[in-house]
Image 1 (cartoon, one colour):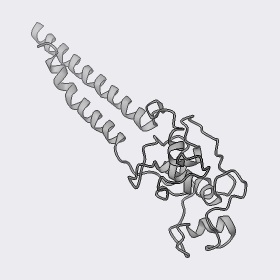
Image 2 (cartoon, helix red, strand yellow):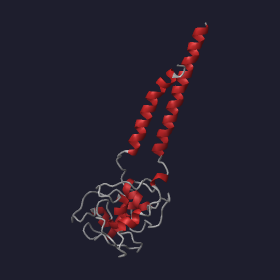
Image 3 (cartoon, helix red, strand yellow):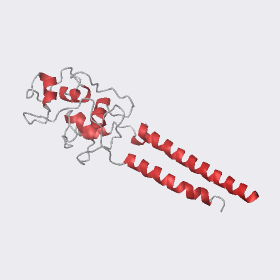
Image 4 (cartoon, helix red, strand yellow):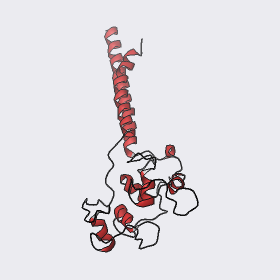
Amino acid sequence: MRFRPVIRTLIPAVAVAVAALIGVGGAMASPLPAYASAVADADRDSLPDDVERAVCGSATCATGVEDRDGDGIPDATEVQACGDTTCASPTADRDDDGIPDYAERLVCGSDTCSNAREDADADGIGDWVEFVICGTRTCADGTEDYDGNGVSDAAELAACVKSVDDLAVTGGTVALWLALVGAIALAVGIAVRARRRARAGAEA
């Protein structure tokens, strides 16, 4: 009986905070990549005109396989990830999750934001894997095997992800957990104050 008012006060605050946390895990609009490309595509080759201009000087000259620095990342992909044809690294991985930073940037806008589950076309191949294989989030079909070892590139890349469950939580998730703790603390404080007032009234 003594704690019933506290529980009644806590339930709405906890419900709101939990609903907000569930929203974080749900579908969210991804921010634009670092290099936001225009939609214009004069030759309809899926490479935006501004990307082609950055790669080779005109809106129709790129093939999508150019690789000026020979790092295995096509120039068009590097331009979209970070702004020029030599800026991305195939090995840079700031959060050590097995997903290259440039691929995370293309998927969701920063070097550490992907959870490896993003799959825009629901084909079972993660968006970051498709970006690495062929430059967009919907271009791979799962049969690609560029090294000819009999194992699909999609499977090899997916095996590189360390553990989605161990990835660092985002700032938004941390903020929501703090909001939940704050709501609980506030509710407890209100309930304790109400009990003190009731006790003081009974003693008077």
